[in-house]
Length: 140
Image 1 (cartoon, helix red, strand yellow):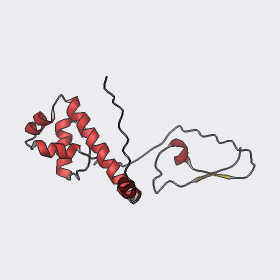
Image 2 (cartoon, one colour):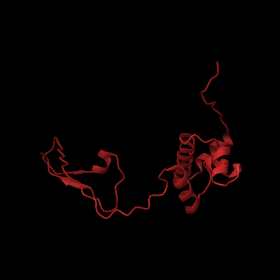
Image 3 (spheres, one colour):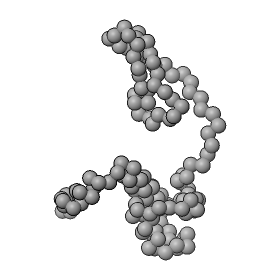
Image 4 (cartoon, one colour):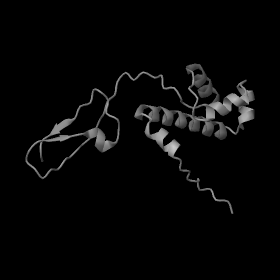
C-alpha cells in the first residue's frame, strides 16, 4: 500500500531561508503556484498530456514543465495564448464600468448604546478596495 502523505523534511538552512522571505515574496510565489495549478488543471481537463499540449501550441516540453513548476514569470502574450488554447481566464482585462449592490440588509446588534465602527470587508471576507471605508453604525 502506497502512502500518499507528504514527508516532513526539517532543515535549519531551509528554515532560515523561509524566515527571511518577505510577505510580498511569499504572495508572489503563492500566486505563481496557483497560476501553474490552474494551467495544469486546464491541460488535464482538455485531455492533453504535457507532450501533446506542447506540440499543439508549438512549444518545447521543457517550457511546459517550467510553466507548471510554479516558478515561471509569464509574459502577457503567453497568458493570452494559454487562455485561448485552454479556454480559461488567466488575464482579467475587462473594465468594470459600474458596480451596483442591491438589496443588502445588515443588522448589527451591540450591547452598548455607543456608536461602533464596523468593518464590512472583514465580515464578508473580501479585500477592501480603497474607496470603501469602515462604516460607523449606530447601536440598535
